[in-house]
Length: 213
Image (cartoon, rainbow, N blue to C red; front, top):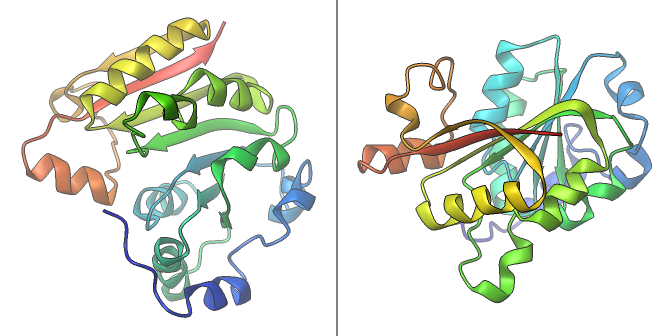
C-alpha cells in the first residue's frame, strides 16, 4: 500500500537539491551531473529509498539514481538525504515509461527492480517493469555486460518475469525462490521496506539476476 498523498510533497520535491528536475536534459550527461566517471546504477520504483540509500552509503565510488513516480513516497527519501546527504545519490520523480528519455546508450551498468507493482490484470502485463517491453527499454541504455536484479514476494509476478526473460532472450544468471535462506544470493543483501514487512510475515522472497546474450 502506497502512502497517501502528502500535502506539499510536490513543492518540497520541486525545491530539493537532491532531485534532478530536468531529467530529459540529463541524458548522456550523468557523469557531468555527478562530476565523476564512476559507474551508474539505478533503481526503478525505489519507494521510500531505504535500499538505494544504503547501497550508496556503502559504495561511495558508485553513483546511484533512484526513480519514483509517487511524490509522497519520494518525499521520505528526500527527508533521509536531508539528514545525511550522500554525494553519489540522486532522485528523479517520473513514470518508468519515460526511462529511455533519461539515459544514453551504455550509460548504466546495473538496474535494480524491487517489489514492483504486479499489475495483476493480464491486459496490463506490458506495464510490469519486468515485462519484455521494459526489458527492451533497458536494453537501449544498459551496458553490454550490465545486469538487472529483481526481487519480489509475488509468486505470480515472479513466474511471469521468468517467462519474459526467456521470451526476450536474456540470460537467467541466478535465481532463488527463497532469498533469505539462500546463503550465496543473500550475502550482502540489503532489504527494502517492503522486503522487511513481507519477510516478517513469513513470505518467501524471490530474486533473479539476468544479463543479455
